[in-house]
Length: 360
Ligand code: KG4
Ligand code: ZN
Image (cartoon, rainbow, N blue to C red; front, side, top):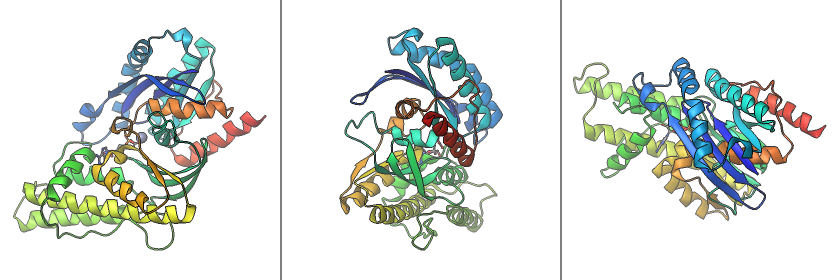
């Protein structure tokens, strides 16, 4: 079936056309309009600016996705849209556009959870990837482990109790003078720092014990304190930028601590679930150090690793279409009263309602 998918949960306006069936997962087009340059001026996403930018971009982004796919609007058989979690004003732009389109075309409207969609980003490049599997979602808003029992049935078995890994990368990147969002630049700076010995030690984000939870706030504070102390020691002004070598060493130490913490809980999750397949996805799954480390971890287990290509780690609409297909197949539909929800909890409650309605 031909699905049009829309994503607008944060600072990317995206649309894609997918041709999905039980034995093929084809991307016909994918368009992503990023607002990064606008938000970089403020050092982070400004929600109201994000909503307005979505409103401006969405029609041309969808138009372009339809044209690139070589189809017309009448060929579309369903519209899938991210309805949660994310920035409420941003989500509402995509949801409202999607419901208007589905209503006008007279096709089903499929609500998609952004976190599940991140995992589904691995489907199109990996035709052999099937549920069940273990999912590690590392993004700007989440650092979570899920026991994915079926394509639409995600059970959270571990999560960050405070900040997400991506948030921590962005914060430390900003204080080190890197442009927003700091993740990709931190990745490169860490590579440089690892060329020399690294003596800085930061506290692990892995919460002690046999749980599968993380905490990034202690690590973030320790890194910020270290940077401020070094600035003072070197006689730099407040918000001063440390010399390149020091910044690289900090990025290396920080990245190593994040990667080791995530891998520690990943090992435990693989031991306890005995999963045969692991999907790592989300913006931070693009991190080269994390990718290499996770590749090593799975070698010690009888487990196959699947990751989306780098281009599908960050927010995009291909992942929404891929998840949308499985939601559609399980009977999930949204009415034209579909709402958007900011939190994971509200998303979960809404999904219970969708599923209950699908069973009737
Ligand atoms: O999944 P995503 O696009 O948005 C959310 O759903 O949150 O993730 C964005 C996050 C940002 O924090 C960004 O800095 C981070 O992913 N990121 C990276 C890398 N590329 C993007 N973090 C570490 N290393 C990277 N190479
Ligand atoms: Zn995301």
